[in-house]
Image 1 (spheres, rainbow, N blue to C red):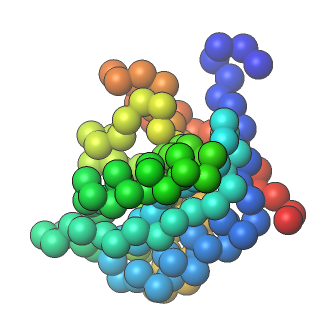
Image 2 (cartoon, rainbow, N blue to C red):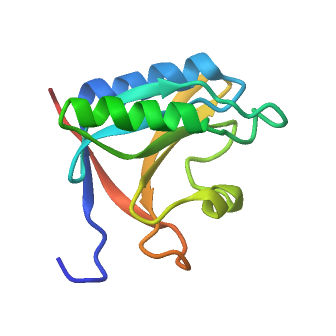
Amino acid sequence: MSEHEAPAVRLARAAHDAIRREAARAYPHEGCGALLGRAGEINETLALANQEHGSPRTRFTVSPADYLATETSADARGLSLLGFWHSHPDHPARPSETDRAYAWPGLLTLVIAVERGAPGELTAWDVPASDAPFRRLDLVVGSE
């Protein structure tokens, strides 16, 4: 892989299915959760409460306490917090300008479109540097 090629992200089937269920459940608000695994392989996801009170339909917020508890739980099981997923109710599965303003280099972002309550396309993204735009990644969903 050259320095300009985006790496592929592997997503366990159970984690994929959990994201779809949780995104549908959260509709019409944005659902969100943590992505746990090892080195580009997402083994599981943990649904988190959207703490955004002003605009939960168009934004998600993870509390510092939830972030810390998620990292602690992952570490205890030999996993890493690889990033976060969130849904876009009645919008495409691509990051918004708001998403970019809050994205951290080194953490993955998965975005799932939810159209009228039905989960749709799921996409993977990262931010290679603090001043860089989102970069789309290949998302490979496992069969297990």
